[in-house]
Amino acid sequence: MMRSIHPIKILTQLKTRTLRARMIFLLMGIFLIGGIAAVEGTETHPVDYDSMQALEMAERALVDTLYYNFSDWVPRFQKRIDRLQALPQNIPNQLELMKFYFYMAGLNGELTHVLAFTSEFFVDSVKQKFSEYNEKAKSLAQALLDNPRITRQNRAEAYFYLGMAEGYLAMMQYGEGRFLSALINGLEADNHLEDTLKLDPRHADAHVGLGVYRYGNTRLGGLGNFIMQGGADLRQVGLTHIETALNYEIISRPLALKTLIWFYISEQINPDNAELPNDHPLSPYASRARAHFYLDEYERRYFREAEANGFVGNKGLALMMAIQHVLDRQYVEARDQFKKALKITRYLIEVQGMQINPKYGETLRAGIKFSDLMVLTELEGKVDPESQVCRDVKEQIAFVDNGGTMINYESSKIRREIQDVFYQRLKGAAKKHHC
Image 1 (cartoon, rainbow, N blue to C red):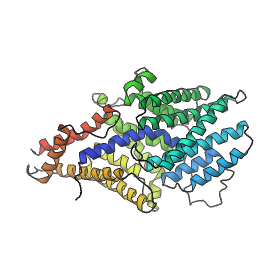
Image 2 (image 1 turned 30 degrees about the vertical axis):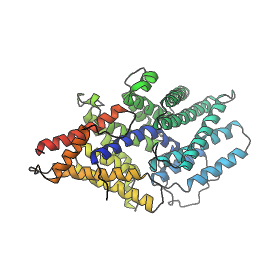
Image 3 (image 1 turned 180 degrees about the horizontal axis):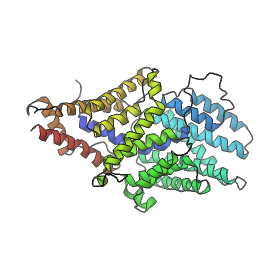
Image 4 (image 1 turned 90 degrees about the vertical axis):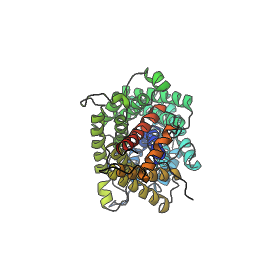
C-alpha cells in the first residue's frame, strides 16, 4: 500500500531544502565561472582541451553542466591537472594548477546539487573528490600568498580562490550541522574575498561571492550574522554586490542570475518586508518584479533555444518557476512546472543513470498534489464541506496545528516563514469553503 503523503509537509520541505540548498550550494556554481559559450556538440572545428587555459575550460563546462553534461569534463580536468603537476612548480604553473583544482572541486560540487545531496543522502565518491580538490586548491592558494614574489594581480587571484575554497567548505559544514567550523571558515572566506576586492575592485566574481555572504548571513540571522556582520542588515548590500557584477563581463553570470532569483523569491515571503512600500527595493512587490525579471533573463539566455532544439529542460529552472507561480497563486502553472521538474528528474535517472536523491522526486509529486488541491479550492462556488477536497485541506491544517513541521532545518526563521505561507493558503481555502 502506498503511504499517505502530506503535500504541505513535503512541499514545504522542498521549499526549505531548496532555499537551504541554495544557501549551501550557491557558491558551488562559481567553479564554472564563465559566460555564454558553445554547447557541447555544436563545435564546428576540433577543440584542443590539452592546451586550453583553466578559465576557458571552466567557461565551457558551465554551459555543458546546465544541460547535465558532466561525463566528459572530469577526465578533461584530470588530464590538465596531471600535466600541470608534472611541470616545474613556478608561479604561473601554480596559479593555473590552483584554478584547475578549484574547478575540479566545483565540478563535483555542482554534481552534488544536481543529485540533491543532503546530510542523509550523498554519493561517497563525489563527496570525497570534492573535498580532496577543494583542499588542494585552498592549500595551493595559501602557498602562493606566502610567496613574496607574486604580483599584486596574482595575489588578488590567490585571495579569490582561497576565499572561494573556504566558502565551499563553510557551506558544506553548515549543511552538515557543523556550525562552529562553518562559522570559522565563513569568516575567513568573507575576509579573503574582501582582500580580493581591495587589490582588484573590478573583480566581478568576487563581488558575486561576497554578495552571497552578505545577503545569506543576514537572511539566516543568528550567531553568524552577529559575529560576521555585527547583526547588521546587509541584505541590500549583498544584492547590490551581485547586481553590480552583472554590469561587467562576468564569468559567473549564470550563477549570479540563479542566485538573485532565489534571493528575491525569499524576500517575497520575508515578514520583515510585509509593510514596506512598493517602491522599496526589498518590498514584496519589488522583489516579485525582480524575481520575474531574472527568471526571464536566465531562461532566455540559456534554455529557450536549447529546449526548442530538443533539450528536456533544466529542473532547477522549472522548480524556481513552480515556486514563483505558487507565490503568485497561479496554481495551474505551478503544477505544470512541478510536473516538468519531475519529468526531467526521471529522465536524468532513467536515461543518464544519475543517482538522484529519491526524496527529491517525492517532494515534486507533493508539489503537484498541493497545486492540484489549491486549484480545486480556487474554483468559483463553494466546495462541499464533506468533500474530499475539504477533508484534504483540513488534514493539512491539522497536521500543522498538531505540531507538524518541515524538515529539521537549521534556520528556524526561514522554516517558520515558509510554513506560514502554505499554512495561510490552506486556512484561506478552508474559510472560503467553510471546510
